[in-house]
Amino acid sequence: MNPPGTAPAPRSEAAAAAPPTAVPPAAVPPAAQTPAPQPESRTSDRVPAPVWVVAAAFAALELAVSGRYGFQQDELYFIEAGHHLALGYVDQPPLIPLLNRITTGIFGLNPTAVRIVPALTGAALVVVAARFAALFGAGRLGRVLAALVTACAPVVIGASHIGNTTSPEMLAWAVTGLCVTTALLRDRPRWWLGAGVAAGIGLEDNNLIVLLLALLAIGIAVTKHRPALRTRWPWLGAAIALALWVPNLIWQASHGWPQLVMASALHQENTSTADYIGGPVAQIIYVGLLAAPLVIAGFVRLWRTPELRFLAVAASLVVIYVLAWIPGREYYTDGMAPAVIAAGAAAVEGWVARGRGPRLRRWLAVAAPVLGMAVLLPFTLPIVPATDVHALPASVQQSSGVGDEIGWPALARAIAAQDAALIRSGHRPTSIFTGYYAEAAALDVLGPAHRLPPVLSGHNAYWIWGPGQASDAAVLVVDALGQLRPYFASCRRLATYHAPYGVRNDWTDIGIGICTGPRASWPALWPHLRHYG
Image (cartoon, helix red, strand yellow):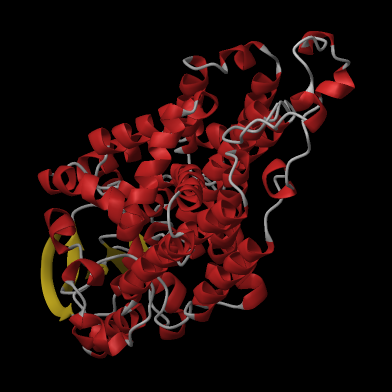
């Protein structure tokens, strides 16, 4: 069988010259019916050398700029979570905290250390896109183009810069889909086991991959590949994924399934009118404005090709789910991006070959994603000097990959200064309470040199970790005066923290104050201080 998208092999010259009375094809010996060999570029799933060059350049760029600004809030939080190793957390499984603990233990406590893993997973995603293109029948140009468009996609660039769950999640989605596609298109059922391993590892990074598994099953069930579900292989793969997921499920069950509460909180936070209006536009921007025609062509090719329609069903349902349920998290769809981009690359390769001026068309296909990346790169990576970030659009200053990397050491110093001033005035703080995990993690990770009191928060995993033995006699409050005021006799503002360089990120204009006269102890107050999101 020819791979999808490839033309059938031509008849041999002998067969073409046979007279009308020749033996019918059915009677020809099997050896005589064997199709003529096709060029290796289309019959092999080999990844061309330029793909590896693109992947290496991608990782090199990510690591080259990884230390220009500073930590991002999720990275600080996951570093601190790595000091509280568990089988799960309120808002994510244990994989990334564990990896961050390992990488910072080896390479030291610095942004580059926690960004090695996402840079490498992003590079792997580039290679996976080329493998998808090979499965879809693309030749050398299509495979290289799939890798290039993936490497230039803003969502891939941005996700591969931050040491959180996003980049490994995208890779887990892509590898799971690649294994399933290989099993179905190449009739290699053991690849279902690889899909199970990839999905199981993905489930220890982010539970959202459950959505992918469900939608792939639906896509297979309603298309020509339905008989595959009657074999044992998909279910063996599912059993592997479940076995790898069980430790986190046990933790979730023993803690009252906080992930479900988190899912509800995220839905409420990401379903504003602006989210619904901007969601469809963001879907295009995240893969690159100039790459939009290729992505559209990819969807069309997946729907029109019966062998690939199961992927079209899954990708379409993912987009519908995100736009309907949680449009503020546009990047949740992008685990399917490598497959859609690869299908588009195969279609563009055909457009280049069959049209006039193939050389010009080839250059247009290659230049479009590169040009789009060049325009958007300062908005996705720390390219411009930190002192100039205030000149970027407000949405970029507030994005987690640019503006939110600026100011955490300054925040720690500002709080340390208020702590020292209170000590000098005879009002030594006995604990610090922050409104969000980001501020608490910044103080825990960056504040030890300042000898600060214990840091507490009611946000996400910090609430699970509890107040410990911290005193509530005099609480230095960061971004949470309104939350604590009902539970203390006196709360007053001391100062307002402003991010450096005039950056208007999510963590500026933060109130710093002090609360005294607790109406109850921390253990008694703790159930009232929990908030997830």
